[in-house]
Length: 283
Figure 1: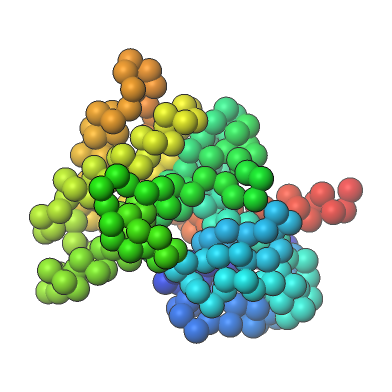
Figure 2: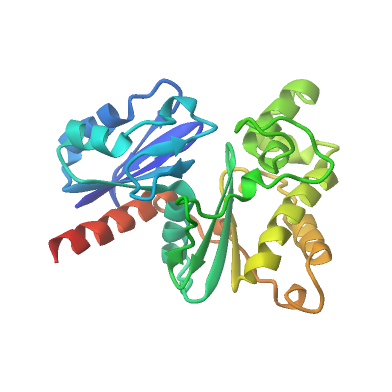
């Protein structure tokens, strides 16, 4: 049995296929939480999704803008010392996509673009099931594409990043400034900035569509599941910003909320990832 861990900027979810526990991220001792969970439920390996960039060996967390305390951490080593089992780190968007493709029964063949909107804006490009990886170990970082004419500071330290205009962190700041009486889950139903939000997201995704011409565009994350999320506006603007006739005429947008979750996608993906890595070690 393997354990899956989904580390987000707000919550950490640790689980098996039948047991899930959730913790607040700020101040959390991740190795200790995993070790405690494994003492209770057992397990022979753990997969962990991290919302940031990792070294090429997926052992060290290089940068996590929304969880600064993890940046530079040799997290795989620390978890293995605490839990006593192999640990396999990967970007959280890859784990989320792995889980969603499994539960939505989407074939990994060809090029698939995943865009997950949570505390930050995560993304991944899968090519025949394998995540695209550049020379520095980076995959697709759509959240940190600079938007023309934008200057808001991003959590990564740069200015004008897409994440600073479409993420949950942006929405929380907007709520505090202009809509304090509205619950964050209802913000899309009252905010005047809906068109601007949908356009910023569409421009960002269109950039990746023009580069990779994906077979499927998978949209997920907690923000995409909020009431009033402007999905139809986003789809229309994505078409507007994409080259015609192709790939605009073949855009295939799927939302991860299209089927209810029995287990969080990030946890499921981390379990599947750990199972695959552990099987490879044993052959």
